[in-house]
Amino acid sequence: MEYWQLESPDDVLHEKKEVLEVSTKVDCDRAPLIWTAFNQFLTQQGIDIGGKQEPKTRLALDFFAGLLHHSKFI
Image 1 (cartoon, one colour):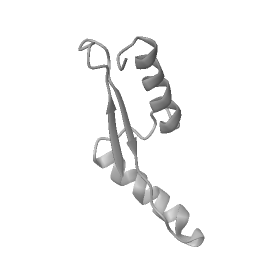
Image 2: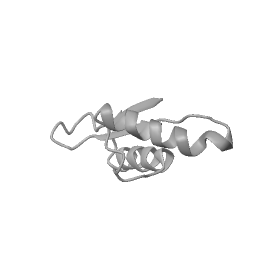
Image 3: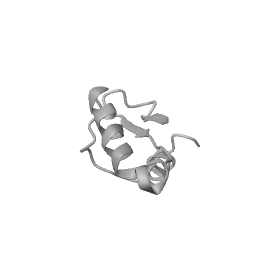
Image 4: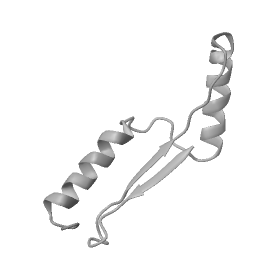
């Protein structure tokens, strides 16, 4: 499991981006059962499994490119 919070250090009112990546490995024959149980577990933890799916790498690259564009690191 990985959890990232991306927020501009100079913009406290800006909505931060939160990324939660979870995964599991199972044998193919158990995948449907584990998929259901895993989704139930996430829902019980208050995690919206219906949220927008987006590759974390693209999200992070866009975020840091934006900071560079606005001279936050230079």
